[in-house]
Length: 88
Image 1 (cartoon, rainbow, N blue to C red):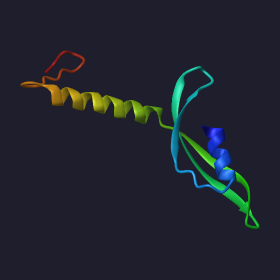
Image 2 (cartoon, rainbow, N blue to C red; image 1 turned 30 degrees about the vertical axis):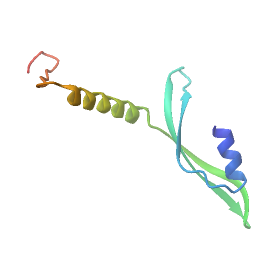
Image 3 (tube, helix red, strand yellow; image 1 turned 60 degrees about the horizontal axis):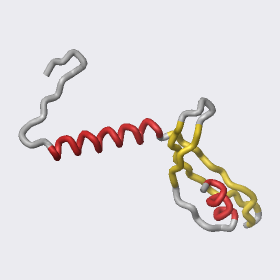
Image 4 (tube, rainbow, N blue to C red; image 1 turned 180 degrees about the vertical axis):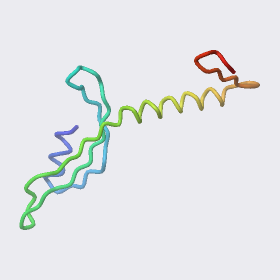
């Protein structure tokens, strides 16, 4: 998808910000957000400047929030929260 969007950008098509999953050097999966602009010289597209932002932690936090929201929505009567020392 990255190469496909690069080719679109080089053809002058505006490609909005998007997310992809990549594999890090240490073989871990990461989610990155890509934002790119074309570079022009004398009105001609000569390249692109792309920023890759690692948003893995943000995506994990969003998933945790979704899970917690589902727990609250499905609770019949009440929810009891305990810390790591089993204190309510």
